[in-house]
Image (cartoon, rainbow, N blue to C red; front, side):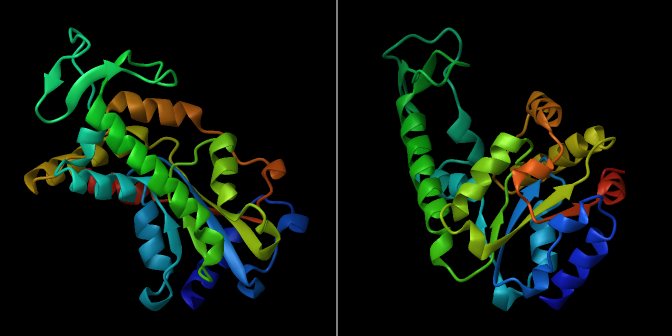
Length: 242
């Protein structure tokens, strides 16, 4: 953990966070880290680099749950996002994904879905809810390893400590990405190709990246974070795409 505290202090010195919002994180009993940044920016690597194996945090990561549920169906990650072709009709069946049914009302982006895909995503939702709800019960620090690109997403991330928030130092870890968008897409494509060679699949379309990039909101003082850490991996990402 000493390495982590040293990294905090180094990053904090570079921040513009008002002095009265900064606390000595090393002296706080428990901490929650909300990671902010698109996929392929180095969030998982940051966790591995900053926490010792014997003192790993309680990580909340929806993708991990998606992978786990996909395995139960002998599917790959991408299968949980599969939708029927546009020409599909209600009642048609897929041997792999089940019956074509009407999508729930919240799924405004597609009128039809596969019933097994909906079932699998409901399992993901329930397991994710359980994971978030179990966070305060642990004595570990908490890391919310998701994109958390806007204030609404970060507010949801802090729900993990709802009712216990005064017991935690709240730390936002912001991964700088602006100016490196194309390199991030290239790296994600490279990783997807490597996953396919290993018999897996996790594809993030360019359009999805563009939506994430455009949705980014800088952290406001009113969001309630005690510290803001900046991580700049842009040169490393560039070197990985050459």
